[in-house]
Length: 468
Image (cartoon, rainbow, N blue to C red):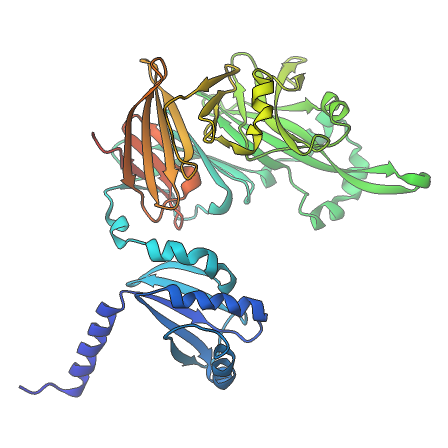
């Protein structure tokens, strides 16, 4: 039997693809620094990967001589007419699936995850929930909150919050509301804070040059009926420095914005931080990676600040409404002062992890901090490793604590059930997680379902918690 030449070539190509199911393509520019190129030595560790160095024909001889200085292991050179951009980057593939596309400087830190990648993770049973195609998120600083059948998605980088509802029986998330910092009119902020309007508009160009022309959302919280946003507003003012030298300074004021998504009513309230400024000697900032919530009944607001006058210690802070809901002020600078001696003695601040809008978790000492009830729960006999990161907590009517955690190294979900009364571990389930999971967004949807956002597309996922 005779085969034509092009058929033989096709069979060889198929054989090549089946052997090299995983590959890395390095697009080699000639404008990087020597240290940047040295990171490519980790290619030798990528056993089982096809390794391609892609260079321009013009730079082929230069690239060959340059790469001879590094121990790369077996690589193949491919030549193209030009590269764009000029700096080096790489792409990692599993079969035809693109796993990553990053500058070569990121490769040393990422190589371990590529070697642990299991294509079987992509076949984990899951239900995708699609958002409208024009929805855009930056997953680097994405956070979510799930309440009833609603999902609040907060994007710190893009300065917006998106409220969605899960459509029963459908494979989609319905976008109910999208609020961007750039959408807010400036005048209500100026009036509420009694800021010099004329001078503010005179400094608009300066604020724009610094990326501070729009109010910025620092936190989002969802109640049963309202969306709350914690907002900072930048403004310019003249300050007198040493020797009576005057200069233009950029300062902040903070606000609470409330939007009732049932009635449509809106409210903007100034947060009076004068007591905070006096307490910290003008040295504090709001920590947007720690919890923020609003108690709709007591009209109490909770957030965390970084006290720069106390070795940058993060402190929880409570504000209470005054003056007919139009104004908040500090009522307790540090209401989590209980067990202070024990807490500070062991340096627990450095190990606190924000789990959700009610709890901190300290994995080193197995402490669960309920800042809404102002108490610490000691989770004895739990013995979790520091590689496990808490992402959500539920406490059921029987006093059982359900902790949803991640093991980023293993890319697994850890679902832990703990009896608070008897102080003992009831169960610890482990199940694989999709590679497409944005790990910061993993939350309980209900007692049997986990929800998270996609890394690459505007969609969410449901995963059922495995039965015992």
